[in-house]
Image (tube, rainbow, N blue to C red; front, side, top):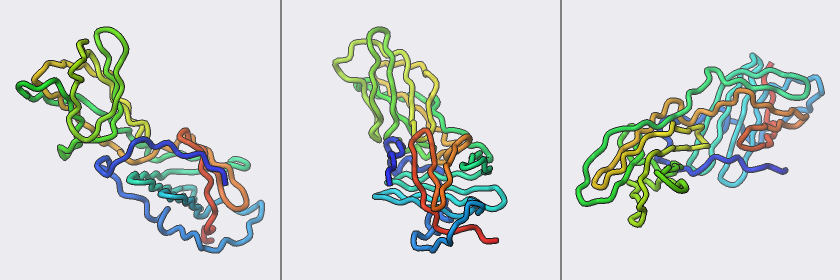
Length: 235
């Protein structure tokens, strides 16, 4: 079974701020469940599972045209729900309600006498958030790209240019901040606040899945994943 890895991005338990994994779509979809023979006319409604090292995912297509989806990989959980419609040999998904992506906004600035300029990305509980990609644009020259490691990030001591803007991104969570002004004065620590919104909820609007007799292949921008059918929906 050929599966292109789903690109989720850097993950940490500290990122899981607002997640409650969809156990019904993952844990309850037993790989050992027997699957009755499927005719071409059989509805695609039913439960589908995918598992590999450190990854388990499940999707349930309900007879009423709704779906539930869940995925766990490493320390990342994501979920989704919405509606599905069949069009020929594939189905089309629409998240309902459509999730609001998380974002990062500028917060307070604290003093740190004698220290180089630094900044933090913090969760609503005040904890530093690791694994956030960022790009710093200076008054001249090329940008600097790095990611947070769960503590305050300090401007390199040999950096003589003046930082002007910072942009944050977490592709696996559909997060990309605005280009935020950066007042990088020595002796200060700038705080940027992570606003979770629908953190951990995947937007599957427009995602297509090809249907076969024994499963489905889900095509997402992050990658393609093959699911095996584990049960059919009850009549």
